[in-house]
Image (cartoon, rainbow, N blue to C red; front, side):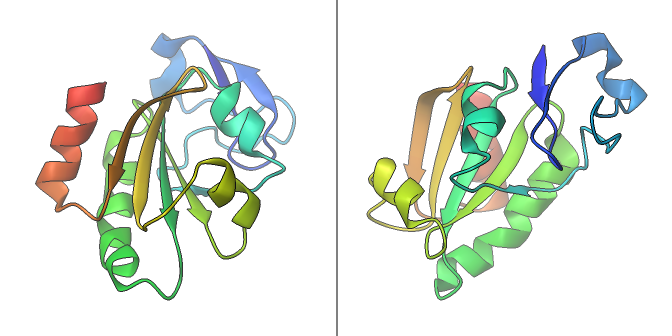
Length: 140
């Protein structure tokens, strides 16, 4: 399975049965699974989302958005509990306006689930933890 390093975005090939062995990046030697969301930018989006074979859950958010800030602990907890089944990533729509425009983000938070680089599910609005996990399960 092709997985992008959360630190340097280098693509790494890792057999799924090796996920539990805490694999490291061949380039920067950082852990491929950190159990926390990564920040997406225009520069790392292609490798992190479109080239990675791992399902990626993206949270489009902004610092001034109350529901976004309230949802952040749920998203962080999901990253800690559900990685490596999913990769969790965040896009700050204030700093990454081009990505927000590319995906036509009209309300935040907006959650998107990508598999093999393709958008397969989208949800606008924050969800309680149980509903968020159900949404992920439904589309996994």
